[in-house]
Image 1 (cartoon, one colour):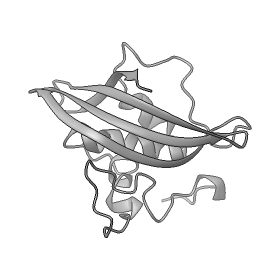
Image 2: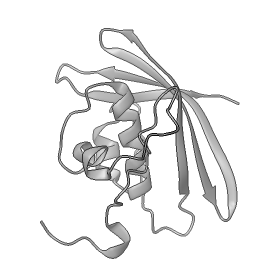
Image 3: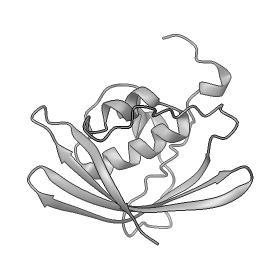
Length: 149
């Protein structure tokens, strides 16, 4: 395995923090390699939309644009998607909170989340109810979401 540039090295702790609805405060953040890294770097298939949501958040944090494209439904994936973490206006992701997760059918699910980030020193939060579908290949993909206040 080749050495990644310092700015692209993977974190030790997973950026998603193991986010889940009704989290326990005594649970330590999982290691990236055992959490989202196994999907982003090793090609494992996320078993549920919840794990896919967390891994997509972590992919934004580490700048894994190829993974984001691969896990986005082709009909809704933006052509200009770029999660370059070195860009001057790139968000600095601060944390993920999962508010709710629900299977809405055999091959569909929703995940409500809040992601906190900074751009240009200014704090923001993205609160979204995301929709996911599982394809014939067994892989979950993000379709779209409704922004919440």
